[in-house]
Image (cartoon, rainbow over all chains, first blue to last red; front, side):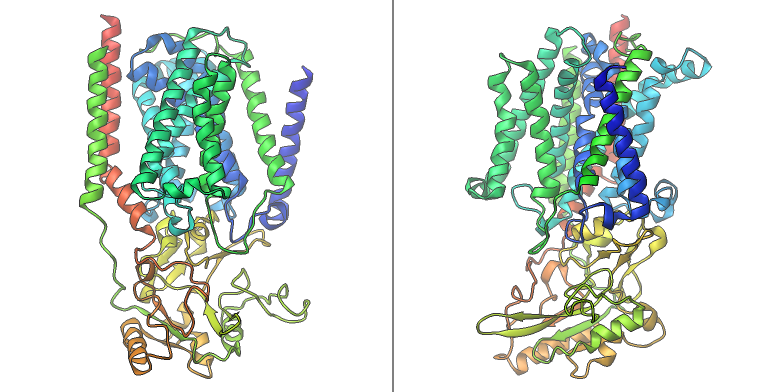
Length: 353
Length: 287
């Protein structure tokens, strides 16, 4: 075991210890959350940002199966594995964040009580479903051939289609969620286009993360990755254009020009989206990192920085909140490394198309 | 390959069209209060800040004292709504004016919290009271996030926390009694009644003494309307009412969401489209 792997496991163990403590101490003692900022780091980072960074599986699947670019097929499995781990960790974060997690099972089962107006219900149901779909998509890599895998193989086309439908829905609904904050959300982020903007960002972030990860998994850099990065940059430019046009249309472009906190973070987001245009020829790695950060920051800002609960409320995550998030990310990375060593993930796979 | 992509773009264009057009066409209708709606009318010119309503509310709802406020732990003196306090009297004061203000749930006609809640733990119950059912609550706190009045509070200190908010003493209402706060108010500063009667009474007071009040019944139109109405002699912003838009908070979100989903027809169509394109791509590869 390498030293860096031991550090990952150590951080993971610390995270788990803190999670256990959180359930004994309660949310008030273990977090900096308040009635003004009832959603914090775990939701904004682990769920809203984390699932978008885990959209590599979705983004690459679209490219391979819908745009029929079979040459990208070797990227599918590692991307799906990242997605499966990312979404599983997001689900775990939600369970830690919920005040009454013992009622969670009622969400998928109490069909008669479903509030069909609730974007959160949709997000919850379809993220749960997507976690299942992702692990099913991985079964050909994880399980030896058997009757079960043969049945799954035959249904795989519809499972993969579901694996593209579900993120389209819940990633856009993660944007709709904050639309309901209405007047409490700063106009630089509050727009009826939020669902579309969230969908666009998760695609750009998905492609960028596939590129970013390839630097760590030791795969040889190929022109394929440069192409993915170009797609991510293109999506980023489209995002900025759409966002600026929307701000102009709603007459809020002036807010972006103000040198307050909101104007400044808006420009940091925008520059991070556009910087990769200049960086692409120099460093693929930096370009990918910029896109991932740009999307992450946009989503984080929509949930926390742009959220204005009123005078007197402040939020900065507590140490245990931070180390639980760090611990979960460490476990995710450690699990990824362990799984790609044991199973045929990076080696590519039989073509299903 | 190019024709497949053309198909996809056509499909996407169709999806985009069905998602945007009805958004404009079927703008969600403004809701009106239910026919049995009841509510409160609070009048700043009558309130003397005695806080009898705060004490009565705590008693009626069996709330623990909040000793974190004034008085160094000696008094139950909440500074605002919190996990121990469903109703509170606050003081507004600047150089020229002073006013008390009573804060509790506004019982919105079209509440954001109800639109947010996954299983209807937060719902419009009898008499239009925004009611809470802990058995369906997962403690996600999304209701708190979206409430424009910051009313729902969470029991942060407890291991089995619930959401705490004014439910207009709905158990007392069911027994034919009035809420505890209005029952004890010695000045009639807060009164209970049928929503339509309260609205008429508010306008009556405005007409009878136009110089006494800011010329507005807060809650009649604001944020889609609220079943708790306010009359004030100081600007409502001073009392902490940050928003005066007339549109209900859920309006935009539900218009967009319903426009995109088309009663779930759009996702089904998209699923069929994705499957069909994949099927076709596979055929192409094999041939």
